[in-house]
Amino acid sequence: MKKINVHLLSMRSLLAFHIAAQEQSFTRAAAVLRLGQSAVSHSVRQLENILGVKLFEREAQGVRLTAVGQRLAKRMQLGFTEIQAGLEEAISSQQAAVLTLLVSTSLASHWLMPRIARFKQAYPEVQLRIITQDAYQDIAKLEFDLCIPVGGVPEGAYQSWKFVDEVLFPVCSPAWLAQQEQLHQPSDLLTKPLIHLEEHYIPRFNWPQYFQHYGLKLSHTRKDVSFNDYSIVVQAAIEGQGIVLGWHHIVQPLIEQGKLVAPLRERILTPAPFYVIAREDKPLSSEAEALLEWLLVEMQQTVGEK
Image 1: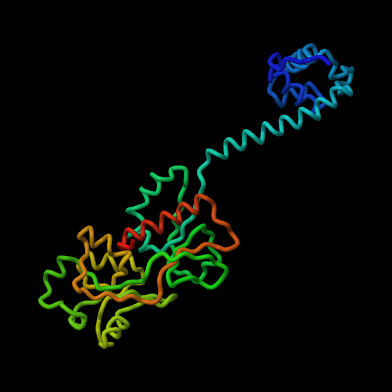
Image 2 (image 1 turned 30 degrees about the vertical axis):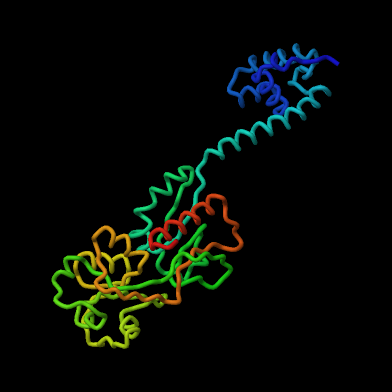
């Protein structure tokens, strides 16, 4: 059997034969390759000379594959299919994995935003989409890789990992606190301007529950300000509008930055921790697992857990 030195074969000749075999025409192959018809014919003839066999029968009405040409065309089809698959795999390996993280507006604004650069530095190949969603009643309709919902794990087929305990305490701005004459215990807050979170979809720990926890009762005749977005509630406190109930994991970074202070030592630990969730029918990718681990570690560092 004659041995062929593959290094003598040009890709141009191989490709010209491959396309001409598919099109059963040198003219149509030339159009596909954007070459002249004579260039395709010359490339095929060059391949035939190297192989020492006739691959096409030249006829008045066109060309047709010989038996040898048909067998070679089948082999070439397999080879070019593998080449295309390899090229596509090489391209896809360089494309960033896209992860969708669903979180509340306040968590995104006050906790996640200052930290996201660290994740990008550790995982530059990951494209992260952060979607804020505060009304989680339609979570089943939303697409995400990971989600940190408000109000615990929703009903449905979800896997979950504990993110952080729900710990609350009053916070206010340093400037506002400096103007107060007496603020040493929970009962002192009854006469102070309170900023409320108005939540329609998922019950959240609120000021009436806070005072009830200490055996106190908040008057229904108060004229306090309320907002339906916790990030605005926090911003109102920063602006010195009054005192708010602070979720530890959200306000702690603001306390460290000097934007907020906790005037009282008392803390309330509720039985409703926050979780990171994912759909059970969607296995976590390696990138999603990395994001999950990063979120848990970052939160542990925030609240001082070991």
